[in-house]
Length: 81
Image 1 (cartoon, rainbow, N blue to C red):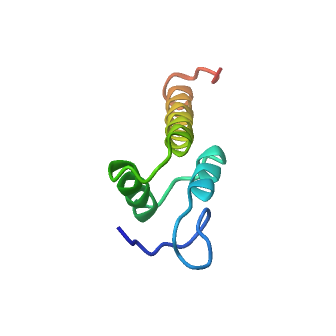
Image 2: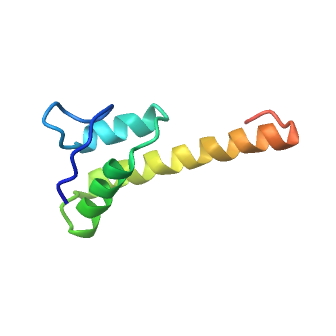
């Protein structure tokens, strides 16, 4: 998939990079649909290395956990751990 995207984690040429996407996830920035589609295409076509895949999965998990904590703190009044 050759999706053209712009924004954080994307070099000037418009092609996403693993380092850029993982950096965005670590900074808790949402990926665009095009960035996520690019990442999934890289995974499903076995273009992603095990290290790239691990970084993407850990970053994705961190984003999900942050959202869960945000939601919990705003619906129950709990302070995030």
